[in-house]
Length: 317
Image 1: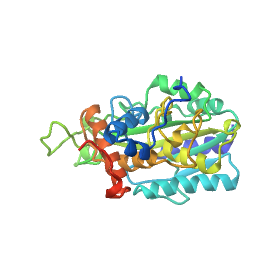
Image 2: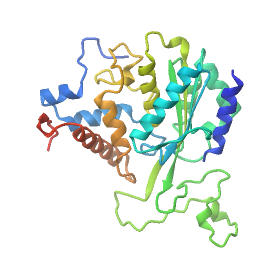
Image 3: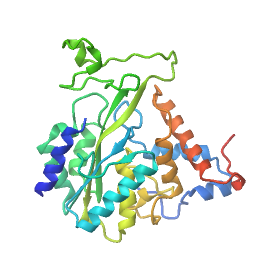
Image 4: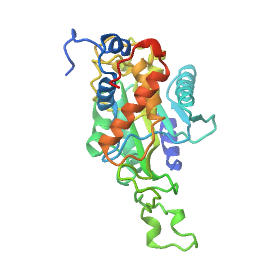
């Protein structure tokens, strides 16, 4: 394993059975033409893609990202870093320029499973910090370390109190600065402090923020994939929590890149609407169902913003 991969991974500590081939593929324009309810299709897409941490809602980057790329040629590394940063900027985030501590780390290798296993063994707390609702679980982490995948990814996120800016869960070793205005350390400083001025039972002052994203690319499994497709695929899984087992074969999506479906040259309208919806939705919904509904509505709003009124979209309203 490359020393640069270990070094970049260590730097992150510093940052707080497919359907039959003849089945139809649902493209946004097909849904519109057929009059199929777009809100229903959007909810199905969300249900297939979203993969938040246990008992949490979909997380997103809060302000900006710093992209680090290792074990690729300089040209490919620069393209991937630029593409992810450009997509981040299109979503309203800052794409930090080097030097910066990478919050998104993209690593190439000829054995992705071995590399993932070595990284987790070397720095286990980077991948599982120990706080509740910060990662997808031990079974998912074991799959990240062992399953053969052309591209694998791992996210660490955390629920925050949007009114105080503090973690909303206990993080081992982390002291809540706002809990002790007098500067004296007490045990309460290590417990989440959740206060709210809202009386709503549907929402709370909580939002899930991404803290770290790892993307490992097995270069020996990329036959037939263009650099542009890889760039969009990596951008999607770096900026959103995506289910590695998502079955999107009934949708037109870049996430079908390694399936037996034909894949677009880049983001499809579904993909663009999902990312735009994720980064425009209002956070803080209490239940998973409410969060899914909110994300589905945001996707619809993002799609409508890109579609002329005369398109005749059937959205169920």
